[in-house]
Length: 221
Image (cartoon, rainbow, N blue to C red; front, side, top):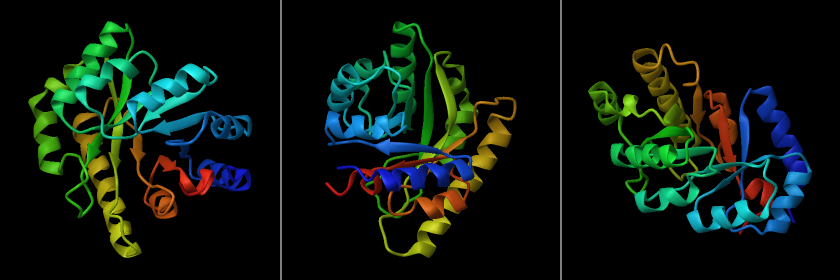
């Protein structure tokens, strides 16, 4: 069963740091999610389209659903009617598809642009040069049904805290540069989604506004 004491501790820590706690509920049952929801947690993150749509149907409608996995363009239409935030926009083509499906549903969808900050090549995302180039070209900023709210990144999966610290610090610096150059007049560009169960404290220290925590709340899979 979920660790509700840990949940309470995490919520207090996030409140102290003006950050949002996203409870990562992938692979967890509706009953487990309800237990965490009834303890006051309203924001949940999923990384599989089929799973998030099934859970959306079964769970209370005031839950804020975040899609935190790698999103394929052909799956966007299934989550477009209800998703609150898509964390991992890693290409212009994906952004355009989200914009199209948001328009079809007569709504705006909030998104984060994913940056590749880890040493592992398996993680997705833009590097700083790519992101600057795409934003400079302008098309991304004309997508009217897309609300770009900030950046997201995943640190290297390592026990080397110094490396993780440097990667989070780098993402924070990228955020500041991107914000001042392209979003200085956009109040909603304010989110930095970084930090998971193993490194959320380092992420918060480096200015994260959103941590994605699963196993610390729900237990190991």
